[in-house]
Length: 212
Image (tube, rainbow, N blue to C red; front, top):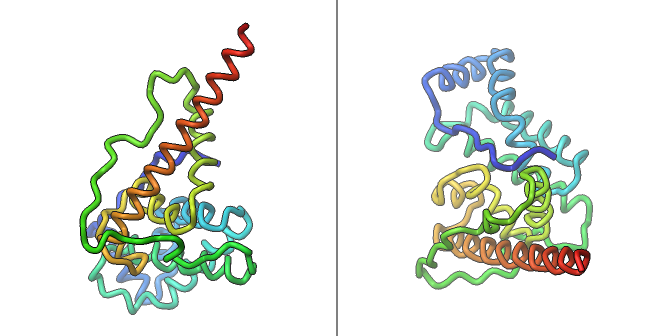
């Protein structure tokens, strides 16, 4: 699995708007250009939700097909990428339901927002940079840790912190309120930081035992 640190530029440029208009008029080649621009990002989101490569590939195909079929409904009130991600998230959740997983796929799983209050931000959820680990190893550790987050937290974290959507765009994509997104993001960051700290503490202790 590739690095999670690359975000997509989600602004709808004049060139992209022209492609969307051409695709609306039946230009498949124009839509294929949109696919090439966003397919890796959509796949990454789908894989984090389904945690299965084959399912994620199916989600990407289904999401782009549904986007093409409903392209005339895209009015430009939101960014095209945000609209596309919303379709992909819905398709990924449907895939989980069809899989009849024992885990709930509800976006409201174990979440209680703070009644309109704005939770404070966590300054830095990443591990201490003084940790002497290669970037590739750290990326793999981070991937596995993110996958261990509850579904509702993981999806918000992926869209907001990994894919770079704004809080408002994340809320719109998932059909949540802005306070709900902020609450889930805060809890995701706290859980992620706690799990990473536990991992590195355990790793440090093991390394210390081996050096004795």
